[in-house]
Amino acid sequence: MTTLQTILALGSGSLVGFTLGLIGGGGSILAVPLLVYVVGVPSPHVAIGTSAIAVAASAAANLAGHARARTVKWPCALVFAMSGIAGAAIGAQLGKMVDGSRLLALFGGLMVVIGVLMLRPRRSGDNPDVKLTQESVGELLPWLIGGGLVVGVLSGFFGIGGGFLIVPGLIGATAMPLINAIGSSLVSVTAFGLTTAASYAWSGLVDWPLALLFIAGGAVGGLAGTRLARHLSGHKNALTRVFSGIVIVVGLYVIARSIFG
Image 1 (cartoon, helix red, strand yellow):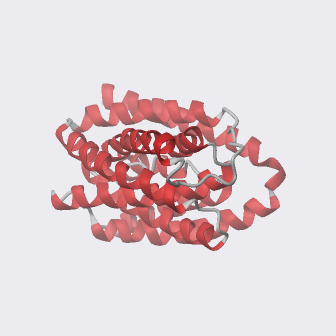
Image 2 (cartoon, rainbow, N blue to C red):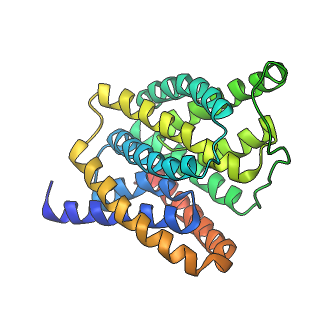
């Protein structure tokens, strides 16, 4: 790795962490394009495997904060995550079988979809006391398992955290409030990222030094983004809309580059 690539890796990781700290989600979708088009990782598969490590590390750090604040609904979160781990393993295997340029085109399409979803207001559930008990297991378990499996496959295939899919999935399955869904989703994001990373690492498709640089940059950027978010809390919706536009534009760029070279 050259000195320039080291600087670009730290800078790219900082940008992802900064975005996560500033708007609270979605920033990790930029990891793969940054690794491919900025850092210069030649293989999309290596970029996906490496970004999965960074996604898992970022989610684990944020999960610790939510756990201390007691916003995680652990039984529901663990069921969703455990079923999703199987899905992520399947998705990662499928992703490795797809040609790199085609995989990037699909990834670009996913970015456009996520960018559009970010423009929609997040709905919140109305059941803050939801619990996975003997009485509720028959109603909640099928939705938690099914939702976790589907999101896990997408997460493993594209090497993303999947938080924007997990949060509405948890709310739809359990009607838990938004803050609990966000905290609980981080259990799955961490688990899915580790599962995807392990699958890619087994195939030799993780650049470990690059992953460490990306994580280090993300930690610094995350602190800066979190501090700035406190001063711009009243403008969070505007920031999210701007970022969603950036995600859509980058997604279209990824599609164009993968098709036309």
